[in-house]
Length: 316
Image (spheres, rainbow, N blue to C red):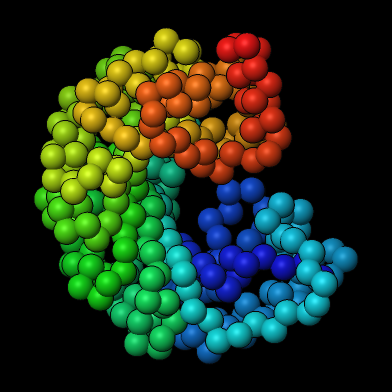
């Protein structure tokens, strides 16, 4: 039997659906229609039970080929669901950045994001959130949502830890307060180490704005470990000199945690170049030299093996 723990541990809000994952592997993901309001947990539990049976078929309609599926020696009964992780991506197309590795910001027929707080309150009232459930603000850019602050305050007041993924173009006083209270952390997608690379990758001349926001967040945080600085390595920013400039920024702002990822489009098309692999190897090596915590974000085993080989070659 095959199974994935995300089916019963995680819940992702998309624009018009609920899902157990974010589909980073470019496969058909189980989807439950939802456009706001109360989450019908009885109906969603039945949906997940049907999905668990579907993936046992020889040619399943969902999750086929997903590397997160693992074999089990016994059948699985889908219990009353309680989520450990909630991801908020219902506002994917709301963003003030123009990243060249992303097309979600481009004009199109996209629904207006629904108010997320009633849905979260309904999960809380139905006992569907574990006491230590973590809520991840994805996106899009969450700070642009009119209910971002009110929802964040409700989550904090009910003891749910938050992680906010942001481009930091827009400084948020609420994020300052969240960091100062120790009730959350921030992931800032910098993807560069200088103004020119930033403009080329992110689609605008906002480098100074972002640095200003970052400095305010670090000043507000109880510890710099509440803030991750992220670098998505791909063809537009994979020179080692540019990666080194990123680490200079990290030192200037007092960062203690960094995150490395690759462009999902290149990953899913098996098109990650050797230069990107070398830059990633340097990234990990330099983080260790500077005694920074380094997280590899959705970097699978084959990519890690290529990085390890490049690191041995570069730093033998």
